Length: 227
Ligand SMILES: C[S@@+](CC[C@H](N)C(=O)[O-])C[C@H]1O[C@@H](n2cnc3c(N)ncnc32)[C@H](O)[C@@H]1O
Image (cartoon, rainbow, N blue to C red; front, side, top):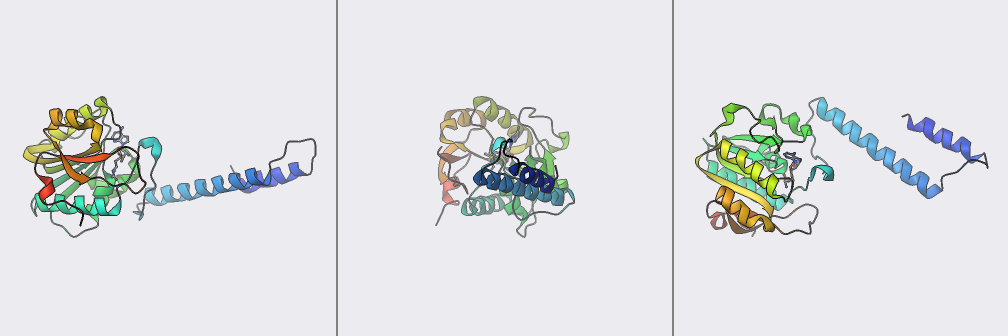
């Protein structure tokens, strides 16, 4: 809709006492809403045009809660340490980690499996991924990655179980597995992926009420900690 026309139309209505009128607060809220919508659409067009934005807004409908910078940086450093120059890192439903890894000098490979197609801007490094179809990814990824970090979108048994199917499919034998999720998923995460709770607390850019933990199948505490 052309917002200017809409606003003109509302102004016309203001002169007609018989018609309902918007209060100035409602009108301001409406204008703010349209402004944000325009900004979102413009960003999307830029992304579709191949321009990588500095930031991707969180979409809570997709359960998107981005890592705080210090968490993303420490996790990225840990992945790079473990992968080494020849290794390969899979970021499953963890686009902020991918973005951080993408931004640093490195020799290893990094790949993002993600449902939000805005991240297709990372071209060959991106694979569309829906945890509900955990093996619906190219066969070439079988036993490819040395380090896998997964941050499933929901705190449900179904979501973690299906995500674990993908994790195991893409993991090389003896791969290092890191699962970032709610503390409540501890037992299932251990049963599915052999990971144990670490002391590394996952911090988010916007504080969450559920405690988030980092689970790993090796001793991550020795090398990954806040200063
Ligand atoms: C809790 S967030 C984890 C993001 C992570 N904290 C980060 O900063 O990169 C969950 C992620 O799952 C993705 N997601 C949402 N629906 C999904 C689906 N059906 N399958 C796979 N991933 C999904 C979201 O887009 C989001 O990136």
